[in-house]
Length: 348
Image 1: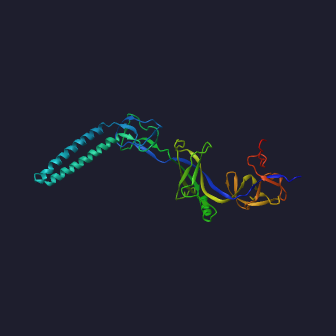
Image 2 (image 1 turned 90 degrees about the horizontal axis):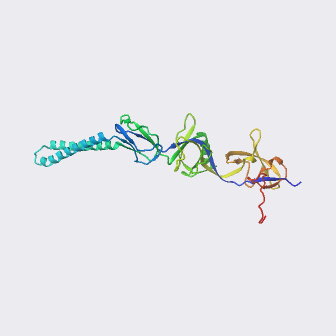
Image 3 (image 1 turned 45 degrees about the horizontal axis):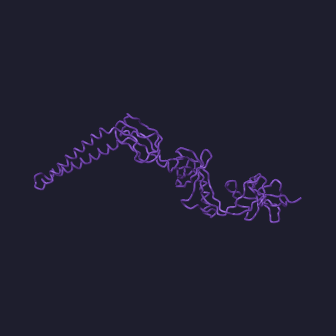
């Protein structure tokens, strides 16, 4: 009988990005509560609920009549005070009026100017505008409602949706382990500012635009032992909405010389010992005890027990035993029988 064929992979160390998948929630970058800054009756609502608005766009119109009257009165008082100060100016030089009277007139003109500016500001507050660009929510007051500056009546909420934040947490224990591996040279750190985050949505799809890690919190939550992380994602189509749950895949570091094998090639026996079957140069099978690290996709990272160039059996494990002579062929992950099929010749 010829030796049985087995599908093998040849160990070739190479760089592997180490990632961590963590749950989190979508949060807005900015939220602006639009509140009344003057007392009055709402005359008009100028926006459509749920629409996108731009910074400075008019949202409400409060009855301006009393504030326009106050501004007219302030303008008249300012004109009167300025005329009096102008009339006193040449008279004080010839001692026709006292210096004190002239100073009082100048001060009264300055006070009238301040009152006029305050009246103009209050009149401007009758036109309620969006303080930021974003999506406006439900109208919290209607036409005819009395709003109050003292109570700071909330009228609407505008939420910025592009870009948007993804806030999640990670175990402090996991961060300490990663830091130790970076310090002893086992791992090569991803460059600052280049840590990429991929978002997995609740329906199982992957968000098409990558995000970037912004910061790690400087404190650990004493109740949970978790550290808060934040990533920023572009959101031009407003697909991500505040409050949505998602899972972030964070690329934390790179193992420059990682040894990986398909998970199906590793057997874990009683006691937690992990073994793989290796084909030697003479074609004989031998078992190797290995230490496995973290999973990367459908592969294990092997931290000890294998070296470059060795051939690990992936397909055909059920028909081999240590000491047997086999015929190794390259493992074909897409095939159902393991060994790679020969390439068809021209014209076949």
